[in-house]
Length: 183
Image (cartoon, rainbow, N blue to C red; front, side, top):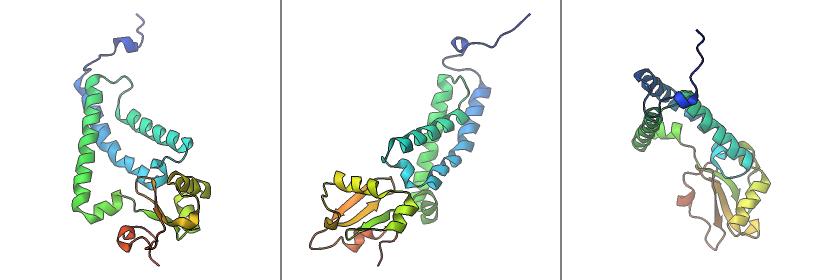
């Protein structure tokens, strides 16, 4: 007798078996720390700079999902994976608020990209931001001339904050946690 693989139509909708649940739990627990690779790829990965970066971020998320979930996940598999990832994220956030050491490992620091109207080329290169992307961020902030900008900062979420130049330069307190803002 010839047996064929069951088709997706025969896959259980709500629950398959406990071995799938155990596999999803183990996959989520083991794969979650690997999501820290996003940290290594830099703030640019999370930025809204161009379509290619967005596609790569989606591919990374899809790859993580395929590692965690079976090829035909049931509803229970999906709910468990989602719940475990939310709980793990909550635990990491809770711990980083209480531990500066973990916070330094988990969270990026903001980076100064432009100071007093002049781009900081080393920071742009290190963060893989082009001058054109910096200029686009200045335009989005309503700046017609970079000379009118006291500072532009690449934030931890990949966005660029623009501080306009005024009679009083940005207070040191607003740039206290920004890499290369001293001097």
